[in-house]
Length: 436
Image (tube, rainbow, N blue to C red; front, side, top):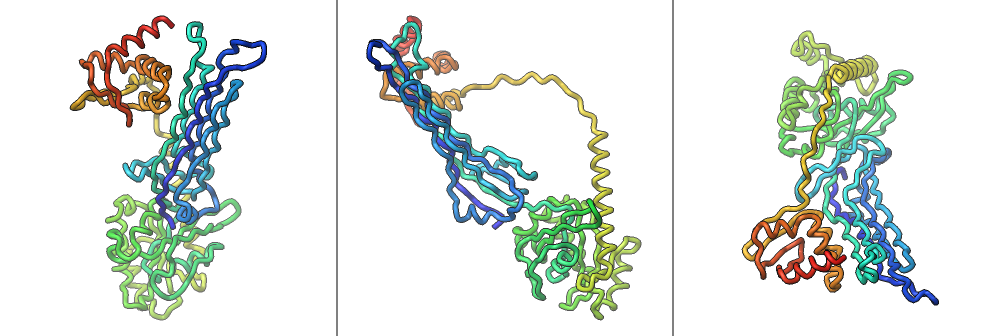
């Protein structure tokens, strides 16, 4: 349950209200319609204590609350409540259709808005002016964003235990931490990554991850390869556990070489991470015939003969892992401190408010601003259409159409709406705006 695909929907903005003050002895109270409330956002929050996405498998549709509609007496609608979705720390969020990465939540309580709620429409009291005393127009609420996203959890650990199935990784994790993984003498006992905290001394600890065993062809998805390999990408270093006893007929040296090949095929950067070699199962008689040969293979490189069952050599192994981590972190701090940054004043590029494209029978206008203007317009209200024209002219759409040679009868498409261009109507709207 470390991947999920969910449909999310932010709340719609509430509609603005068309209302006029009606009180005794106040014959011309004027417009008093309130604004609609904003729709709620859909927010993902990285949460400690969670390790899977199982809840989202059971609830793949997540929606925020809609904003309330405005009412008379200038009462605005309530904003919709946000939908908070808790996910494990280490969750990567992508747009399912474009595969664009939206966020990587690597810290507890880190959050991201993955779908914004629609803004509320303005009530008719907002459109009153000295020449427009009785506006019978209000904006509709903007629809909230709806999208499909994919989630993928990659565990975050300081040290990853890698090795072939049955090498003894789970036993080593249970020996060195309070983790309680399932342990048995058959391949793929570990079906999910397990995390444990190794405590060296007071305020000296690190997170150790037991990565499920890999096999030949894991980088191609062999065995359970693709499900597990992604979990080792965040580790800072590895403890490579080798089964020295070779009781199932495997060769320890070939296992070491083949597993490193699998790591490199999946992600070449993984082969650059430091590795500490742990020669496990020295308590078994079969290991005696292999230990000298394996030590000769590694030459001057330091190896750690251990027994995860009895605990022999495990202390020294974990002490070395902690020292190596401290060294890596100190080098990272030095690199960060030595990086010289220069501040430059960057002139922001002018933001393009819309795009105009010629079509077979007219023009297509795209962009968030014109789309928002259209979807918030009541197309059955003449004053609302005039308000829409005002917005489009203000953002430069009308002038752009004129420069592009728009003719009477051309079809103008904005979002899912189509309009027929009419110079007479444009002229009448222009005249009305001038009078106002």
